Image (tube, rainbow, N blue to C red; front, side, top):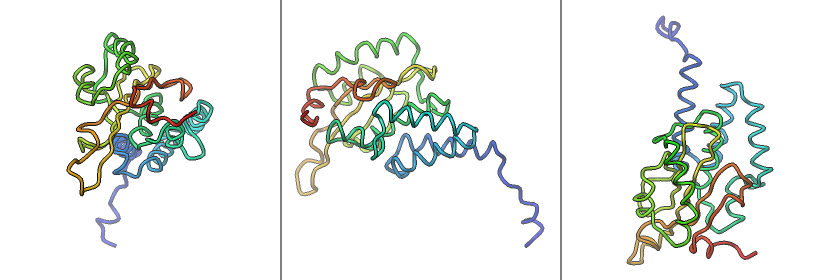
Length: 221
């Protein structure tokens, strides 16, 4: 061992926290790249330990279960109990709610109160017909958080939020299906279509307003 090795300093607690927080936020944005729901839970466990918030995180998980947002198969299972489209971006949006409440979510755009209230108010109206990702972006503007990859054809979730952790997130879930390479088309739709608008914080199933396409994809009850 050299003198340089013995003098090497370990990371500070603040550096470790910054690293974990950056990884958590990267996973919320690209869950498929980092390992999906399992990776999210690991980063949340690590952040809760780092911030001495293990009990608060356990209570958060209990709340998810009580609200029907976490089943034996996780948050993904909660989405799959509603329809056949439980994608990783949808799952990430639920964890984003938890991150926002704990002050761990880095927002790309913070909505002012009047803009947020306006979006909450028109969500149900948007769901009266089928709309594409481009149409919604044209009306709502850039999201506070984009969950999902950069592939323009793949499913995505757009999240809109204020700076206040107790304001529920407005989550817009978009779906598309990639087709076999042998077909002439890349995907079923030219761009993802809106399945539902979800307002966080409520009982899971009660938070959704479905579009016609979203309704058609739901399991029969």
